[in-house]
Amino acid sequence: MTKLNVTTPDGSFEAYVAMPATLPAPVVVVIQEIFGVNAVMRGIADDYAKQGYIAVCPDLFWRIEPGIDITDKSEAEWKQAFGYYQAFNVDKGVEDIAATMKAARGIEGANGKVGVVGFCLGGLLTFLSATRTDGDAFAAYYGGGMNNYMAEADNIKKPLIVHLAGNDEYIPAEAQEVIKEALGDHPLTELHIYPGRDHAFARKGGAHYDAADAETANGRTAEFFEANLV
Image (tube, rainbow, N blue to C red; front, side, top):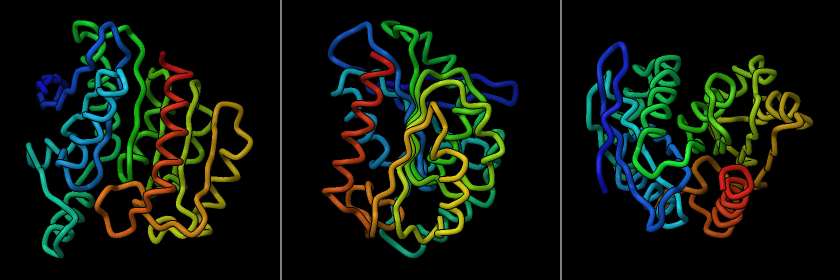
């Protein structure tokens, strides 16, 4: 594990970096949920490094408070997390992801290819990265609020895979219909719905974690990245 310093016109922030055993390698930028760059996100980055990627997890809440690292295990932390979510500037977050991608391409051993994967808030940011940045592949898990940005779908230029929970408490049926209409037949987008699942079904240790569907979704993402980044 190491840290990457990312510089923007507004200041600089750090990103957690997990390196693979073999270089050169593509980069996968791992986008946080609303709990900061916590143990779950670092674990996901470590898993991508084991798969052969340079995994980079940027601290996108740095403008609010650098180094936020909380869990989903208490009511107080959930309240704290929603406060961060409400204070977060989505557009600035996407700009920070673009800056992270640029910095990550400069890591020794990076081969120039960059993918993005994100969960929850990070799922929304991954979709917006697909419409606003120069990445090579994007994997969005249950991005809350994605339905509000479907007008940007025409800007997708590189492959995108989207995982939605069929019974998502934060992405209701009507919101999912908007997403399906915009992305279901999009030539660069692969859309998967997981019936009966709730938000964050892929978060290990979470209240709605489902091992079987998490494995299916993560397997699809692994195949997707291998096809588009390796």
